[in-house]
Length: 586
Figure 1 (tube, one colour):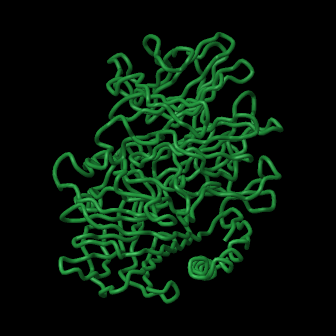
Figure 2 (figure 1 turned 30 degrees about the vertical axis):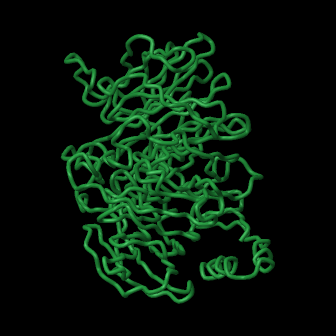
Figure 3 (figure 1 turned 90 degrees about the vertical axis):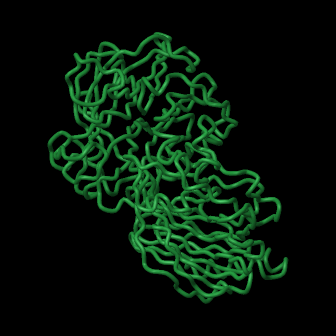
């Protein structure tokens, strides 16, 4: 369906009589395909989840696959998705309703950029769900639930940050009745005797209930940038999957964009013990399908026909990974007890990612994470996340049913302890701008890297002097199109660039405002309208970018430069993009 038709249908629902609206709502828009994901013909095109869903882990229970992915300082944290066929994924919740373990993640600090929720591990054992993760600034933690949709427990801290860096993974060995967790401890426990360059990875024994560490860890592997381990035991053989950097240019560190460097997937194999000794082999590297983007870090899964598959991320050593770190699905073949992930396109015994392949499981409809929203529910959709923990008194879906209300808080001070720190995970372009210290910015991921158009309708009648509110695109940089109310009560449109510089637009005398943003590849624009039909461009064509370990996002902002005052209401949001979208009522 064309965006203009979708926009017309949405506006018609709000403006026609009840009977006419009901008639419109009974119409069904069929599922659609695009340049990635399920193609509707028994095949898929990678990435199958072409959005910022990084650091995946997957657990299968019955006929359903459950995926977690990291999301740093966004709240709620640790998105959870589910799928019946490994290709079509939908949102079902978050593992951390809020980032409760550190004050830097609260709305009155907003000082946790790039930290918070990192790569984790999801497990289901004896009727309990577990999610493990390490916050670089706090340590190893676990949250548990009886239902995948929650409620999830308050995190239990298991190891301090002084001992561990990131990426835990657990394994329960039913044969020996022992539980284990493997962790990248980097150089935090490294002794002078270990001369191998890179990260140390240690295995710790856990209590059977998965909540306590028993004793000291045992070193099993050291390697350059080695992290993101997963443990499997297949036919009595132990396998540890690890991501590791190959440094073709040591002038940059692992993780820094450099086309000469490559992050590969390696496998450790032992037929003796979980502690080794281990043989090591590279099983996946970047090939010809995805340019310079490295391929690694993910989870091994199995289909009902016993075929093996591997879900992994594409990472950011490329020129424009502006959608973040998407997920690829690869077939796995076993040769002499070793996995080859993807297709060995150069016959060197190492797999490379596939671009198009047959689906592992047929018979399920095309689906996708949620995007459009008419805010008719009393609960926020799973596609939305806040920039740090929200100020819950300053947003509502019930004060005006059918609308999202965003109240404006006074922007936080531009002082130490507030807003972004400049570090290896952030950039310093515009980091002292008010946007990064304005609470209750709500957003969702962009989908894909080709084209996309999002539209939202705003009611400006609740705005107060010194308030700024409207639409934002942001990841590594932000670009805003919104409305500012001045001290004299007049409202003007404005565009704000990543350095916080405003371009003043026309005076707005009415209360209805429609904002539309479109992108072609990584170039984006804004338009505005007063009737939802006739749009006028405003502001430059700008570049969307990855940064602070986050891809570009679409959403809403509302802050006040002087006081806690004013609000905007959002009636609806629609997003049309070049990718799979589930059938829906319109």
